[in-house]
Image (cartoon, rainbow, N blue to C red; front, top):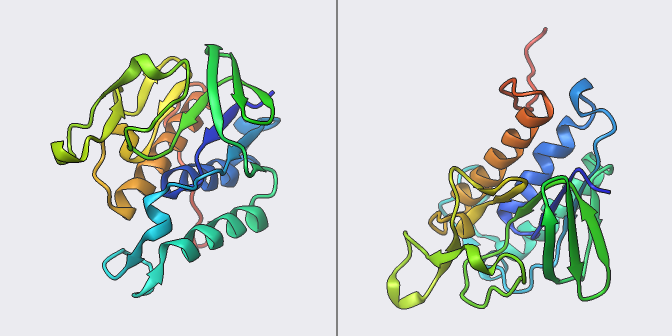
Amino acid sequence: MFDVLIIGGGASGVSCALILGSALKKPYAEGKRAGILTHQKASALQDAIFWNAYGVPPGKLGSALMEESLEQLHSQYPDVVQIPNEKVMKVEGSAGNFTITTNKSTYQAKSIVVAIGSANTFMIEGLMDYIIPHKKAIPEKNRIQLKNDDHLVAEGIYVAGTLAGHRSQLAIAAGSGAAVATDILTLWNNGTQSQSHDSIRSK
């Protein structure tokens, strides 16, 4: 069983996975298991080119950034299980015991992070009741989001990125995924506010 399973390998999903991966050696995360389903064929990131994104070299292709971020996740935090080429079809159960069914397999998780795009083609059975019109998208685009309170959809279900109601900007999506990760770390740390980052300063 996964303690957390992330659905989506775009900016918000991988950002969430990187933060979680960096914290798995912390005492409060000992024995925790994290995974990410990286199927992301329809990601806006796939078609992007970046000239105005903080920390990203000008002219960087989104497709290259996706590939490099998954390589970074694998090399730096190999304990985060990457599951490629599987599309999630259904989520059932409740916090502490979710069953996630893909087109190829099933997985158990205590909590999930839904980090796929805001296209109205969203079709994950078990999550459809949470869909509302996107509050920050042009109405003509017919974008959707999941109802949430600061990324929390329901107990054990988090949403990140544009599907959380954020605008489609790389930095916002990545920050949204990171925010969800720190909320999960705080939960693992018995409610003590938590984050995970490194520093060149001597301790």
